[in-house]
Image (cartoon, rainbow, N blue to C red; front, side, top):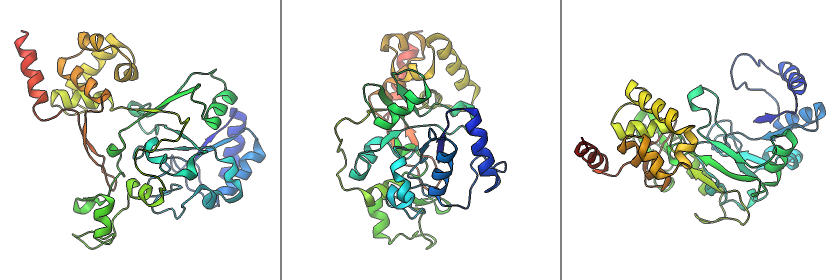
Length: 321
């Protein structure tokens, strides 16, 4: 659960309340033994301006719609406090289009946030607003889902998320929902129950076909982190010095990463980037990617280039010198 608070004073009061219900210092995401509706009531008693968003709403463990959570609706989870839930955070393994398949979520705004586990990954998913940067204004934009002020979200391709498909990591088994059902939810290698992923849960709860879009919904753009594009283009590991040098060069020349990925003119990108990297950035913008879906805690593998594209770009680069 993400809690938004209007001031540090309110945050401190919430901390004191939670400290009485569990250990808030043992983990970045502490677990509390209380019904979630009690949390909502208690925080609203502290301040009526606290705002609640179920985080990574579809991942298997501890999430509102996860296959291990036991809830098929917000009303089932939050009971009478469901009226105070106006948004959900889609998580890496789902995107807004998947959530639009559930008519029961039509009143809910989809937001997209990044876990702050490591600084380099902050902002890999994000929300883009055109409004005053004021607490109540931002919350009103989220609450209403006003597309005039909430311009779009920035999303992972959901297949890249580590719980998109079903599977069993220890056995290297990955299944789409139909194949899982054909195997009666059991791993064919070890016989244990498979971890049921996000796509399966969406299929189970959806009452609309893939591709359905309700009117007035906030749009989204899909992106791949720049370092991953550079690594794929150059045939190097994401954490290598070669990738880091190219990344820093592009940031110095072209500005912030999200601008490079989504906004910069093609000519400008090509003027300041390795030709292979420029091709990769443009492929992602067009959605020309192939992804082996993630499963059971294993991230999906993104292929930014079709077979032969990278070698063709390398040959073209060599002919220039």
